[in-house]
Length: 384
Image 1: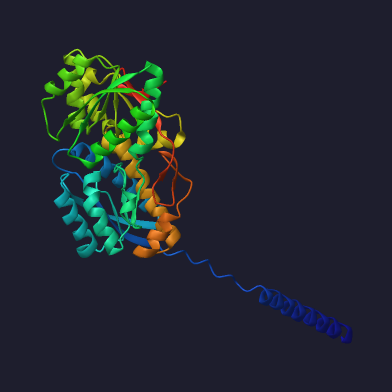
Image 2: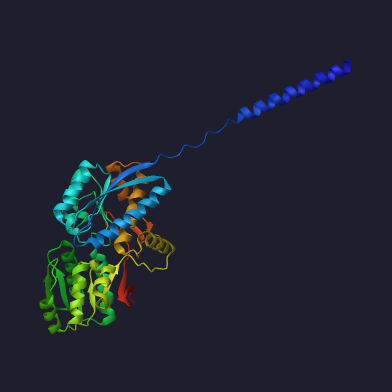
């Protein structure tokens, strides 16, 4: 009996010890609470784009690019963007009114657009004075980011694009004498002309004539007749796609067969749609090539085609990347505060987008390489 009692006592002590040790073991490793999720950054981003009137082809592509990027960004969850879109109709006064509305009434964190450099000349100073970051996605004239420290762009400026296209065309076609043709009532087309003229002078080309036209003009026979009579090796033309396509069509009908080198305004499928076969041989430089053998480009093109039933052009691609750049800045800033967002934008370096590797320089302008294209067999192809 005593032996049985002793064994029972020992067993009880062992059981107690095991319970005690187990409790101590558990006490040494308290439960770790689940890691808190980073808060979602909400931001209202204003858009100023040409949705109606002349140039609406640009605006349609741009807003499509923004919307596709917005849907993808919001689906990821870290940043949630609401786009507030305003139509400028390509007019300065409407672009300014849209900027004022977005800044004051809508209280947006930043603005994307407007479409034209002429519009940015009035919208940019308004945003800058109000401390609102504004990023041009299609404004390529000289001096845009010099408006102020809140003004950015991710669109390749004419000062980088045109030298590439002119340089390759001159070498390929052995160009020695040229005619220059440009729209003299638009900041963008005037800036393109200035770059073309400088390139012609730097390459010691003979400039046979400089002809001008105005936005909305439909008859170019006088200018083209003079150009044809001078027999240039090429025509350098700075125009928006609507005027540019008509110029190409009329030039070819008049028997002007020499190459055309266009500014950034020609970088639209609308040129082919309007000018048809007359667009053949047009040379342009762009940061975007839809047929590039790159997985990111192919995926974007496929998603865009599924959403909108067409291939994205340069303006859609620039808008798409711009909203992703804005989302990256929001993530880095951790807030939609305008001043902090501006600083985060200014620090964007080596962003890998569908346009390629992109950085802002010290003046919030573009650092990237263009590709030179030619319209051949009814589509844009790499110019070789």
